[in-house]
Amino acid sequence: MTSRKIRTRIAPSPTGFLHLGTARTALYSWAYARHFGGEFVLRIEDTDVARSTQDSVDQILESMRWLGLDYDEGPIYQMQRLDRYKAVIDQMIAEGKAYHCYSTPEELEATREAKRAKGEKTLYDGRWRPAPGKTLPAIPAGVQPVVRFCNPPDGDVTWDDLVKGPITISNHEIDDLIIARTDGVPTYNFAVVVDDWDMEISHVFRGDEHINNTPWQINIFNALGAPLPHFGHCPVILGDDGQKLSKRRGAVSVTAYEEGGYLPEAMLNYLARLGWSHGDEELFSSEQLVAWFDGTHLNKSPAQWDPVKLLWVNAHYIRLADNTRLANLVALQLVKLGIPLEAETIATHLPQVCALLKDRCDTTVALATWAAKFYGDVTPDATEHAQHVTDAVRPAIALLAAKLEVCTWDKAAIAAAIKEVLAAHAIKMPQLAMPVRVLVMGTAQTPSLDSVLEICGREKVIGRLAKA
Ligand code: GLU
Image (cartoon, rainbow, N blue to C red):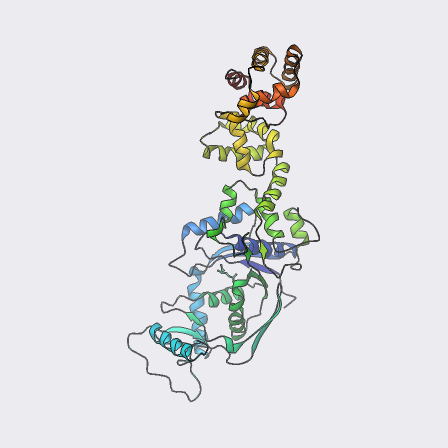
């Protein structure tokens, strides 16, 4: 088994967006394959026909692309492999490893109810399971059978989980799993095994909600004579209230973070660190992740989603990001604010705005809120206006406006004009800078004034100072 080629996969069900938990296991699977020079497969588990949608498939593919999780094979769709599943099921029935079960849902529920009443486990009673010398019930007319797997009646299923360590579950705890529904469509636990077998998957990383499914899957692998992959079950991600992260508790989809102004490298860094560590490293690139990620140091206990830390990580990557790249992202956010910009502005002017402001922004949404002040209207904060734009300073502001109207429009000339006004009115820098900031940017907290004025542009600056 250890000599197998390393092949991992992520197998999302397209019944919603790419969930953060799935994105994280996708990331681990991807990094593991890349670390060992193996291959990573994307499989779309769309057998839940009623809940699967093309829109979800599109969202999943887009999120994978955004996170930079490139795959070597796929997307492979389970619904395009029905013939293969059917062939395996027919073979299993022929070999006595699976059987038709004609119990109706009502009958099953009645049996479960009776068992519950007696305080027994509500496992399937095996009435349609063939056995030497056993007479099966007469096949009822008009009932479409399901197919059940002949689970080993005794013994234990044991595996050494890559995350949780050794796990043992008794076969007495599990029953004869339905592997094909009445319409012939296979169930998850069966299709996943045939796929992992056919796709030669060596390592399965997935959420620990699947731990209870793994014994069934191992038994099916064994029944098929297929080599077992290694399994690693990652704990759930908890919300900041300690409950499982869910839609009701805020954003859970990768897409929401893309829209919320996070950079993919920040998400990748944060998600990887959430549930895995490499020494004390908090900030690392995807190349470093690949170099370090060998499937060890995965946390056994659930990680807590920390929006504040994610913002800190994002702010780090925003600071590092190229200004033209940021400008393109900010331009998309500005459109949402009703401020579409010309391509020329996005290419030449907006990058300067980003360079000036990225140190103080932790998302591109925050950056866009700042950038909007350079392109849209500005309404000075009323309190700050009352505090800083006083009658005492108005003459100085007027003088500055007059000087700015005629000076060369560059940072040095603007700085010189400011100095002249300070000297002429015998005031200190903050006495002039604060009101000018409030008038031009709407707030007194801005980057250096001469840079702000230069990038804001003469016409806008003069217009805004005129409202003093
Ligand atoms: N479709 C399953 C899910 O989204 C895949 C589980 C697995 O990786 O085996 O949870």
